[in-house]
Length: 161
Image 1: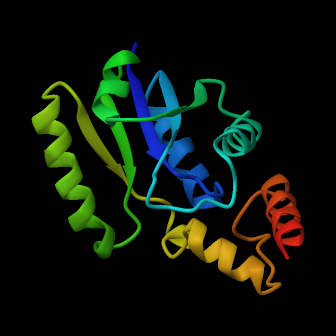
Image 2: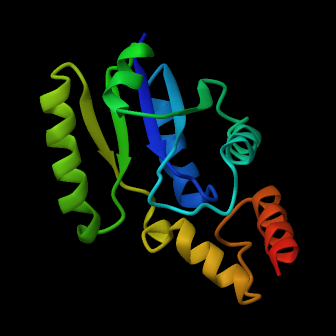
Image 3: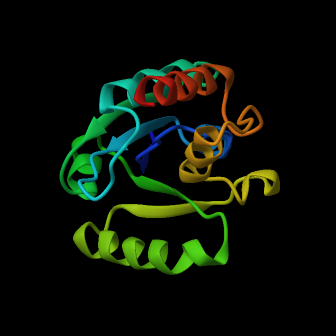
């Protein structure tokens, strides 16, 4: 069974992320969406909230699971017997960082392959930061995130302001 890990902060999960998840779920027997704990970022949603949101919106893909991890991604991947890491590339600007990370991960674990997937072109500009900024200024984010995520983002903004 071929297992892939799709790591990210997913704060919040967007249609771009879901596009990559759909592509990965067609290529691998199992995809584990992993919510990374990144001390450099101040997320809008807690780890548990992000996991709950992701689990809700990936239900159409029965071979997709979600959990969190802390520490080195390659160690988590080894624990899960994963053979691949999924990384989304939106634009050329993503490539340099992702390429460096892929080489570091390969050095740490030669058996782990990084697979770069490009989202559909209508999602190439999309990221979670943009979604949060548009929402904070009262903009319509319905084209960027599923309805459940949109409702949760609006609720968070309402609570915090």
